[in-house]
Length: 318
Picture: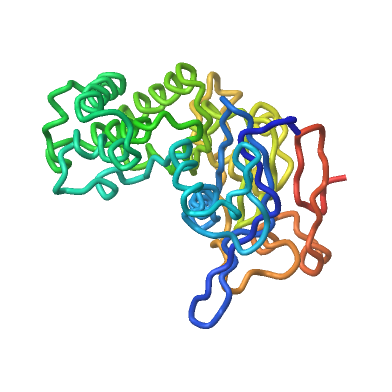
C-alpha cells in the first residue's frame, strides 16, 4: 500500500431500498490509488461499477466505510469543504449528450464550472475554453455550437474538456467510449492516455471492455454483484487470472490469433447475473461457476492473497 495515496477507499458498502427489499449495490470494497495512476473497474452490467464511482465523488453517500481524498475523509467534509474539493474530482459520463444542457452552447458548458467556482475573469475563462477545445482536438468555433449539432465523438471531447476546466487531480471515467464507434473509441482512449501523462491525472476507468482497461490501467479490480472478487496489477491479472469469473471474462475477449495454433474458441459466461435483491448464498458466483462445489454454495469465501498486490475471493485459492 502506498504511503500517501491520492485516494483511499476502506470497506465501503451501499444498499438501496427497492420494493421493500434491500438491493446490495456495493459490498465491502477497499482499494488505494496513487497520483498519476489508473484503476480499472470491470464487470458485467449491474456489477456496481458506476455506483462505486459516484460514491468516490460523494454523489452517492456510502452506508458504511470510509473514503479519503488526500487524507481528508469525504464523509466528514462539510458542504463548503466538499464544494472546494470537487474542483479536484471530476467525472466523464458515458452519454455526453445527456450530461450537457441542450440550451447551453459548448463554450458556456465548459465555462460554467469555472464561473461557479469563481475562477478567473470572463475574458480569462473564455481563453481557457478555447485552450481546452484545442487541446482535446476541436476547433475553437465549436464553442458556439449546441450539443445537438455535434457528433458523439465531438461531444465526448467536449465532456473531457469540461472535466479538465478546473484542473482536477482525479477523473472518474464512467464508460466514456462505450457509446462511440470503434474508430472514435481509439482516438478518445489515446487522448485520455496523452492527457494523463501531460497533466499527471489520476483515473478510475470504468468499463466492460477488458481490452481498453488493459491498455489504460495500472491496476484492475473485477466486480461481481457489488463485490471486488479479484484485484491485481494489470499485467499480472491478464497473465494469471485466478478467480473463475475473471478467467471467463478474459476468455470472452475477441482476439485475432497470430497463427492457427493460437486459435481458440470464444467462451461466454453461462447464465444470468443474479438479482442483487436476492443474491445467492455462499459465493455469489457459484450458480454460474463450472468449478463450484458444495462449500461454494454454503460458505462465503474470504479474500486470499495470491501474490503481492494480487488478491481474490474464492475457495479455490490456496
